[in-house]
Length: 120
Image (cartoon, rainbow, N blue to C red; front, side):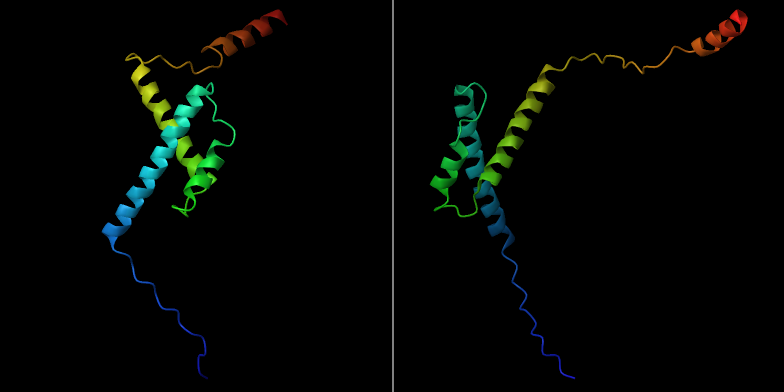
């Protein structure tokens, strides 16, 4: 019996330095988009203006076919989270507040049982 299935040629791996440059170029484009969105959201009371991301995608789609609303929104959310974390770390006090574990104080259940028995 002869195997008639064709084997697909394995794609050659791209040069790692080339893929790193490509990744860095994509990140630069996304960083620029994030900065523009952040500036426009500050002017709009902290909210992204309606249609701003769609307009960016429309403008960049011819030059950067990989870009989409999802990639811009994902990068922007990461950008905002990293800014918030940086601000939170800067505002943290040096003293740690003891954490309340909750629940009843130690020994109160036993006291309640003995008090109940004495009342009965």
